[in-house]
Length: 491
Ligand code: ADP
Ligand code: GLC
Image 1 (tube, rainbow, N blue to C red):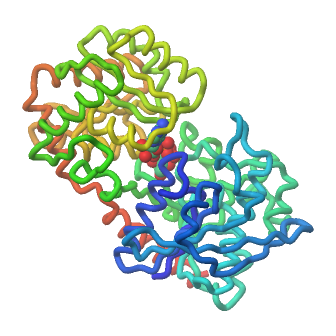
Image 2 (image 1 turned 90 degrees about the horizontal axis):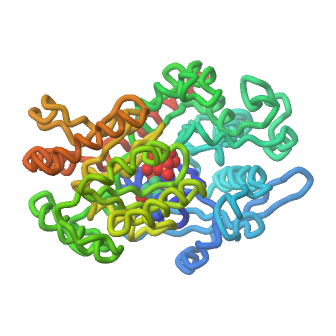
């Protein structure tokens, strides 16, 4: 199958969150399975180093209102992978300091930037740089793609049976813009209606993707159900409920070349399930030393690597950190985001020297070191479409403590007696998003860590021995692509 996967971020080129891991992990898995895959993303400033390896394969031009805007299509590859990568090079839009935001504010022309990107990728495909069987768009930045394919390109012979899949990584980000930005889509005004592209008077690019895609997916089966409810649907639940079997949940995977304690070059000691005790002890003591934590092997070290937003459960941590810190525990946090949470973490570090390490910033190596060094991982998210760090934690033998929502519910099995007996349990789960329920799960973890090391070992074994790789999920995406293509045939 020829697959064009379009994303606003992808490792190692550009990343603000899990989308970058997913775009590359899935593309690689599809390509390793023998499909012909092109991964397309904007050429941001950071790519400039990579360009030495890339080659200009052509140029496209898109009419943005009355202006004609050009972009070069640069093609590069990833080491040892047959995957092709297109970088859409338009410096006025993308040669900037960051991806979406500057000084805490979204770039004022974000709709124009990503509508251009989406349209430029389709132009490149039309110019036959790749004639795909299916186009897989991700999140609002590429939400217009299914609309253009179904309403314009499909009238041409080459695109008559090109299917579209649209993946929602987070319902909280709608890509909502003023109504007059409709003119930047190149689509007729008639689509600006409440069933398709309009939402409360604005152009809504997430809704556009959902409305026009042949198949809609999201990143876990539980989140697929949740977003059809008013609690999680962010206002678009009626549109999602209408999708019926057009909406599918597929759990994200883990890229074993990036997250694998056996070969990870970013951690001080590599280990496997057989050597997990020794390996993690070495990583833990190195990190305690590096971050100025007390070098106490017995203290349960909780790790957390996260965007600092309301989504991720920091209000529960704020409420219960003092209680938890009365026990023989330590916290290591890594994250950036909302100032109130940055201050919360700094304040904890100040009040509990040697027990709390607050690392405000973005640091790939430290993220890996934390997964390897921590004894347990905190992910009490209010909602979580999939979540990757709980899966990375399984792989690194670091049982996660999670709220039963979205992909957390689909990947963490609670340490009940029964689940432990059956060797299924791999972490700690609390059902209600309430601080007392969170605390109860934390105490269960502390109790087991201190008094029942054999049970703890079972959690690690269950997490480390399961296959979290992309292979199974990639197979599921291929089925979705086949369904998308067959829908174009029955139109
Ligand atoms: P989300 O996409 O909602 O942020 P995910 O769990 O899907 O959450 O993915 C987050 C990804 O970003 C993980 O790979 C995580 O390690 C990484 N990450 C988040 N914050 C940081 C940070 N401050 N430094 C390094 N990596 C980070
Ligand atoms: C989003 C979600 C996260 C998910 C990621 C990749 O950022 O918040 O749960 O893992 O996308 O799909």
